Length: 112
Image (cartoon, rainbow, N blue to C red; front, top):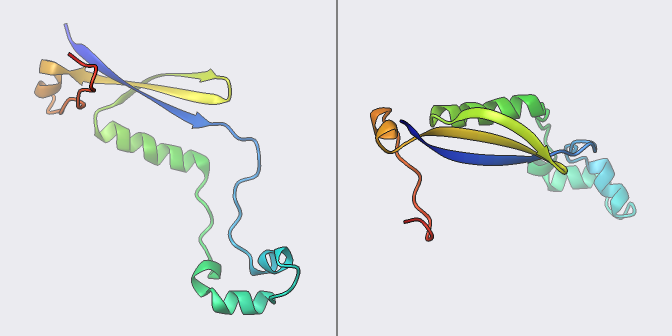
């Protein structure tokens, strides 16, 4: 009978707006207009260069899930605990893991 190891990941659910790209106009307003937006953009070009649009959360999650899948983690269930969305994964351990070419997770201090 196969043995399994489990991994639980949580995702914070936030209904607020996603973070916006840095804007020299907003930075100038926060400083009370002491520095002009043009000055801020010129002096901090790396921070205020045209940034790519943030990736959609679904695309970020897909990328993350694919990384776990490459490590042979299988998503078996999702559930919500308060504001946390929990993802439950499993993969074989012991002989099953070795047969599948997997390395077991390191044992913790309380493990036998």
